[in-house]
Amino acid sequence: MITVKAAAPDEGQQYFVLIFDCGGDHQVRTRLKEEHQGLTEAGYEKIICIRDVRPDFSRAEIAQLAAGLEKGLIPGLVPVDFILSTMELEAWFLAEFNHYVKIDPLITNEAIFAAIGFDPAIDDPATRDEPANDLRQCYALGGKTYEKSESGRTISALDYAYIYTNLVCRIPEIQRIANHIDEFLTPA
Image (cartoon, rainbow, N blue to C red; front, side):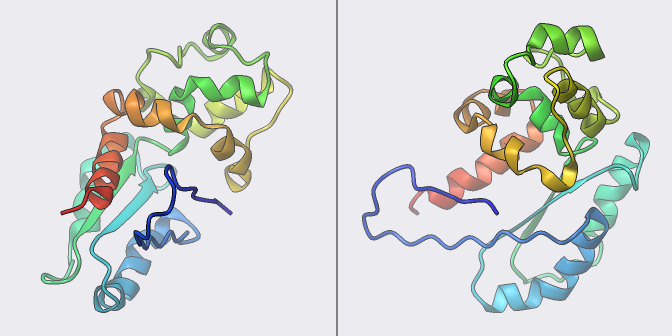
């Protein structure tokens, strides 16, 4: 479970956000098709669908996957933005280097570079073909494990201020998410 906390005191504002786990990347488009009309009728103003590219698709198939996700959307319903993490969402975790010390102090940028040839502070995480496996190797440096199904520890350790202010400059998909959040929280 993820807890969302307010950044400022409650002043009577009301925001409604529904976060839904489709139970697998292959279900994202299917669930959207099932729920799109109902979410529109319920008054939702935007749907953001996030999914991994792998293991179902290769890097070469990203454009084809993106086009397939958009195909068949019903005009007039709430707008949808499909955000593809290249290649897995863990690529974003790899680049957020401030969280490693919270997992274990032995997991340093230098140790990560020596182990997998990737510097989390400067390298492009989109170039990594198997980010979840890379994250497992990083965590192993501190005697820890990483499993996709148990990502809560990582999510809790992430430095969201860094993600929002710096990582957005390195990862266009995170910038898109930040733009959606800004638009949502900025009064019209």
